[in-house]
Image (cartoon, rainbow, N blue to C red; front, side):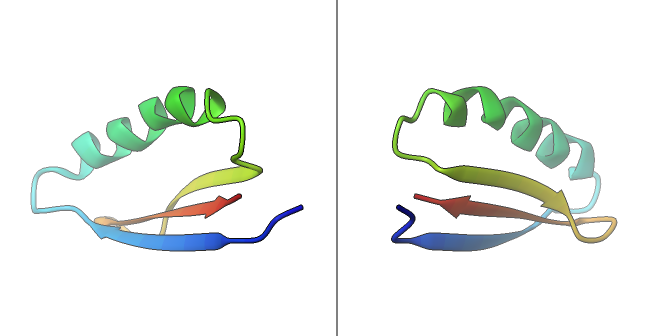
Length: 56
């Protein structure tokens, strides 16, 4: 059962957009190791705006 959901908005500094994208892609591996995470999504909202949605 999902009890908590979080949405985190991230704004990359100029020139760091690819670093944030990479960080989020690599983060999936860590999230898959968390047994209480029901759903985890990394999204690109705009050229320098990213987000994470996590439910557990």
